[in-house]
Length: 154
Image (cartoon, rainbow, N blue to C red; front, side):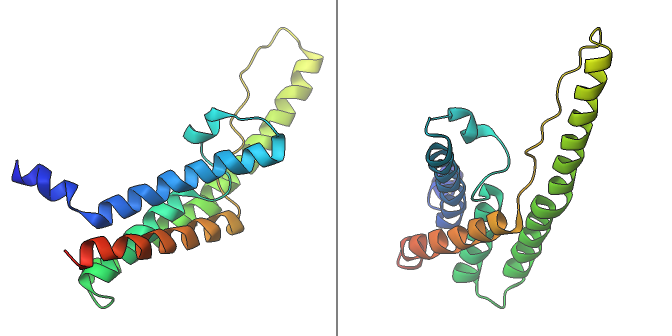
């Protein structure tokens, strides 16, 4: 039971998870402003503004820094992890989304010529723009700083 209590008292974990959750809700609101209708699928999809992955890993890294120290090995590990995740979100997954868009265009053209083929479209919104990653990261920093008094005072 002590392990469960320790997990429930881990403010860094809750800061990181909260940052991701807040980012997902902000995606829902952003999508609503753009399309003027609520699309709950946004809550479970990748891509969009802000990056929830970036918010999560940045809140984790900042939370580790605030609890263990900016010079700690734990902060170094969390920072490298965050960099890899954010690079992947804005680099590799963004490129994969662009490739999916091109492949979908090719499939559409092929189906016009050969309607007997029936292929499912590829998911195009996989990654993030650099601005989406930056905004997710800023959100993660803010959430970690807001949660810090919970862990630092107790």
